[in-house]
Structure formats: C-alpha cells, structure tokens
Length: 182
Image (cartoon, rainbow, N blue to C red; front, side, top):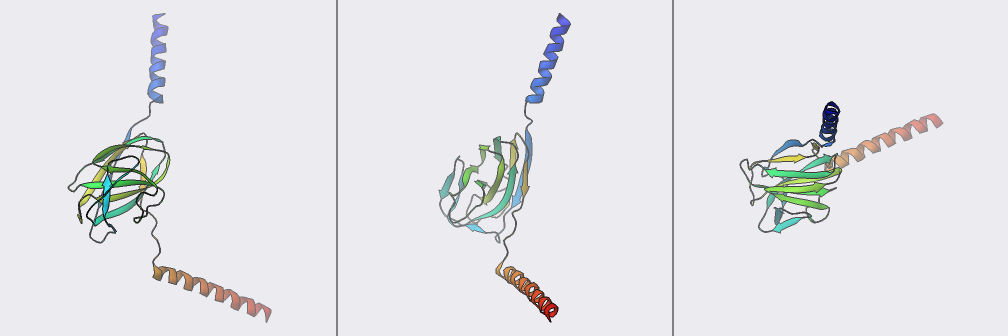
C-alpha cells in the first residue's frame, strides 16, 4: 500500500510540474541618439491600460515589433543602464500624433502587464527631455517574446524608383505586344 501511495505521489508531482508554465526572461537593450524620431511633448508613466505624461519634450524613441505567443502576465523591469527609460506597449501600429490609440500599457521602471497572444509595437523612449543613452528592459513571462525591427516605410525617392520600375516593365510589355501584332 505504501509503495502504491509513493508511486501515486510521484505521478501527481510529475503531472503538476509538467503543467506549470516555465518562466522565460530576456533582455531588450536599445540605444537612443539625437537622430532618432521624437515624441513632441509626452513620455510614458506606468499604467495599464495607459498613462501618458504630457510635459516638456522632445523625447527620443525607437520602435520594436514584439510577438507574444502565450497570453499571460509579463513583468517589465527597467535596468537603468545608465539612463531612465519609458516604454509604450501598442497592439498594432503606433502613431506619435495620437499616442492613446492602440495603447495597451505603459511602463516606467517596473510594471506587470497582461498581454494576449499577438503582435505588439513597443515604443522604447527616453524618460528625460532630449536624453540620448543606452537603455535596457528585462521582460519575464510565461513564454519568450520575439523581437524584430519594424519593416521600414519607403521614402519618396524609393517610391519614385518603384514607380519608374513599374513604368519600365509596363513599357516593355507594350513593346513586346506591338511586335507580336506586327
């Protein structure tokens, strides 16, 4: 009987440890320079859904796309290396002119944020006016968050080259069609 109880306790322990979600932690380092875009008169304080603090400015920022595969509570810790940072978490796109749109949470220092599985835009910003430095967040949660830089938006000269290339291809197609008919 004792042997059966030990085996049952061992099996229950294994089932509980297998069901517990692992905690994943990763570091998100970034640097801000005076060539980065600026938030005109606001930065982020801690809050969920959002706490956008309007004062001073400008504040440099950088965008990072984050993919969350597992819903749950994620802990964001500002590592202060050496500057003070703030972070906005957006579901979908970020528009600097309308900072409350798509905002899920804002982080200054440390904050627990509940995230659903999906793709987010992290707005990594300085906390002090016109501060350029190196910053770092440690993000801990039920699964790893995958980071990537957002796809660049073509400039006007790049759009002109794309249009020119399409016109050349269209012109070549017309020339080939005329030669076939002749």
